[in-house]
Length: 73
Image 1: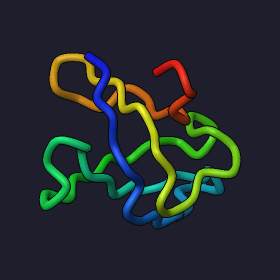
Image 2: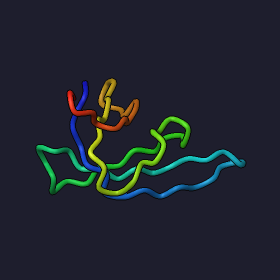
Image 3: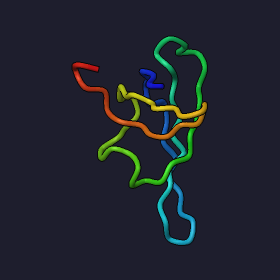
Image 4: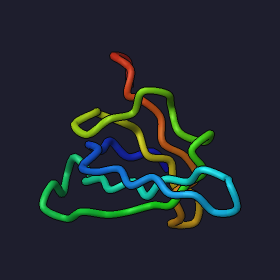
């Protein structure tokens, strides 16, 4: 399932020299609820920043990926 969202915050961290990021985001249809996902940094699009419009992909209610929203999305 794909959901439109806005990036609200990013918190990078390292585990055994591997980069991860806690991504805070709000669904477009529920902007008051801030959600979070922890993903490997290489699983995120380059240049992701606060305020970006994105598509969050869920599989079984778990965030499987985040990508920039394109004009056709």
